[in-house]
Length: 450
Ligand code: UD1
Ligand code: MG
Image 1 (cartoon, rainbow, N blue to C red):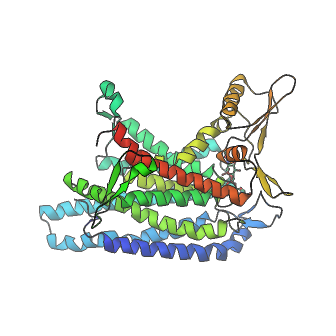
Image 2: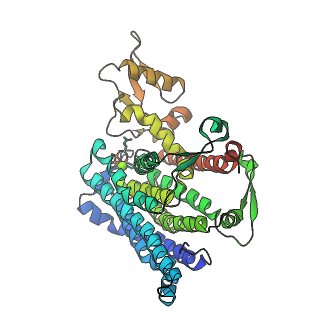
């Protein structure tokens, strides 16, 4: 019996929208107001892609994270107040006791989520201040996710995956991944936090990714709410194969004897709506030419928020579909992340002050690349993912454009301004989400039944 009661969810949902508008206004006002304080505390950075070198307040994601987490704490009474009010009169009856247990459960979901967000904020801020090394910071989100995983375990969380139709002959319909599923979920938090951080370096890039992913999650959540009327979205317009019935999910949920589905997506909405608020407010100041930098704090806290809703809402695979550009960027980055190809401190594109255009930046080989590195780079180059500078006589690789999606876009589309590049990046993220929806609700019908 979920107490984030879906009937009627409206008061808490309205409150959440109100909190989100407040989050937007607070970020809009506080980010510039606290700028000088950040600079005084030496939290400042130089904009690498500008001619001027005025210090820009760095890690102002801390302002966003503070507003976000404080509002989430203030919000606690709203979804729970109905159930709390009805507890005393049910006394010590069986129903009353079940109600108490259920309330504790819902609260532990909410509180463990807050704990993970706080851990992400601390980690991000420490990274901003101390520039933590990769091998130290990668495992921390795994630990930060343990409270989430314990809560998932305590509610008897599902560790089965549904096998696509063509493979059922070998594996059957369901496979229980057991502990492996927990490994997967803890890696999810490392991925969502770090993948936004390594797709960074041009004004607006970090926050616009977070904004578009959050809006995609919200759109997906809305499909599961009990709308008064059902309507159909023709997915074949998006290249999918079916139509999806909005509002129908509610009835499906009821048919399975649970309104839990609705409750989970409401929970996700409560965490995503204020995130959109702070991101929009911050984006105003981070937009080209940036007056504020997000720092690692914003990347980590937004990334963790996505893991939280994906895990607690039981839709981590759908969530990963909204990270297609980040997955692409991560796979492309692997040779540099794992030391096969030299990785400079900054892989941001190169700025040409004369034309005001960005060009792909390059990684320089001081020693000739290993056989494996050469092979990988030549494959990448033949796929059009990087451009190589080859020694005219002996054919060894001297330089390669840095392996990021930003440099890839510049290699493919030619030099462009910073503002144009962030707009292209946002278009790619939106296109990724459109693809994600058609895969999730269209193609899924081809490989899964029902
Ligand atoms: C990650 C990337 C790095 C990229 C950097 C940019 C990897 C492995 N690491 O490192 O390649 O250069 O992010 O954020 O891919 N900055 C700008 N304009 C912006 C945002 C940031 O010039 O719009 C610069 C500023 O100098 C700022 C600095 O980037 O101070 C922040 O870099 P930081 O977040 O510390 O870099 P990492 O996350 O370690
Ligand atoms: Mg960073």
